Image (cartoon, rainbow, N blue to C red; front, top):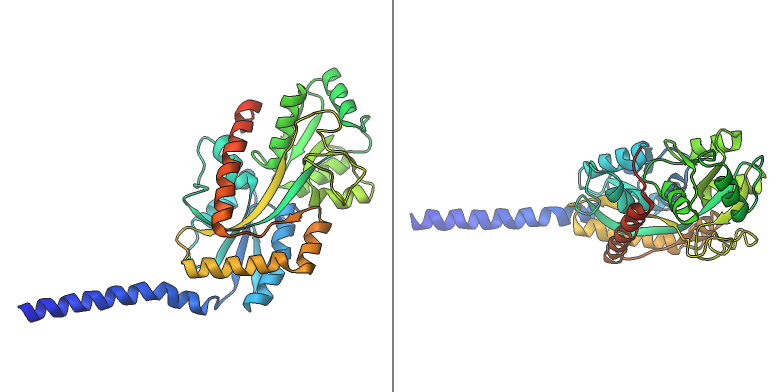
Length: 327
């Protein structure tokens, strides 16, 4: 009986040891098939642009195809939920945003995923200011003129966003609160369709992420009024910040980062972080992001996690003070 017990114990020990080495073994050969990056917004917006810039580099570095899967809707919640439920094997990643991982937790009463528990942060990708833009036919050209017009015409200015709870939406809500004006929020299923309607005149203004708005400003299709960041952008040196143009203390900057589903093996997390950091330090990749109006921001997973915690508290306060809610 003793020998049988010992043999059983040895078998259990060997089995446990083999089980423990399986994740490491999988990570060592990773990746062996294509990787998918879920973008929780439609093509053409900043999240999509940044994901595609990174995907090209990652594909070369990792030796596998890296494909983009756009799943827009519900302020990014649909695609983010899909990523949260994906196998934790490193083959499904998420390009998350300040909306999906810092704002939505306060804005939605029932979020279909947990921004903290359901994901492993890999690295922040970029900090991006929002740009207050208007259809050129609108009568206001400055922040002061916009505020004066909004006060004289309460509720008549329609401002678009890429969806409820996005930084674009909250930038508008913060502006309304601080300027003490009434404007009507029109949510879209992504930045691209909102910008299309802005150019077409169906909406008047938008606090769009700079990468998706900048080409239209340079082409003369949109009028740049102000930046939502604390300082001016080298891409638009003549465009003031909202704070310096008439609303002191105003600041709302978007950020984007890469995530993996919770439970992804540490070795795979480390490899992905290393690849993303290399990409963001590559001169060509940095140039592409800067040309879009963004600031590359490579970091370790633990640094990104601490940043998300601080951002969640910050935007939770903004949501509460502005009175923003999901329509």
